[in-house]
Image (cartoon, rainbow, N blue to C red; front, side, top):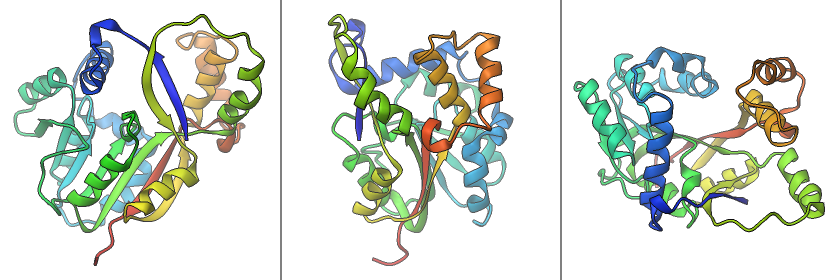
Length: 266
């Protein structure tokens, strides 16, 4: 499990949750804020993995989106007949979502202590959220286990500690000159597939699968971080499209996604 840091922003203060809220509020605002673009989730790799499981549930099954961001998943799944609650740390984003979509369920909350009752949800999904707590995964995974119904499904993605990152940490970073000291703060944990599976199993989940996803994103990050290409340029985007079918996922995939189940009996 590898630790990633980010630049320290004095305006965020030192409190971890306040800093996370500030950071993600800025990210969502930079993307234009909630726009109700629910149909775009059907193009997501996460959707193609999760949907075959979800559509086997009876309509009316209750879902939770932990770290819902702009709310597109909540909108699409609710309209498809699976009432979904969107939980996010960003008060500003949730306020806008509630105003724009009053018939859909959104709430402000911390995924380590959601406030929901035991055995509340048939499925719980969270994309790129579990890794952002410096204390580690125990509180958030324990909470996911508690609020899922027996037999309920958990879908969770985290950054992948792929071979590129491992080689860079082992060799390249050791031969570089030390960077100029600048204040940083914790950003995220990066995991291998085995590490994510072990964490989930340790907290009671039966792990069905852990897949490598987002190969194109991984290539674009390689082009930006290692070759210093502008990620917004058409050249970088075109290279990402051309190279993604060729690059092995274990080398370049950006994220991993686990599918796990809370046992039906305890």
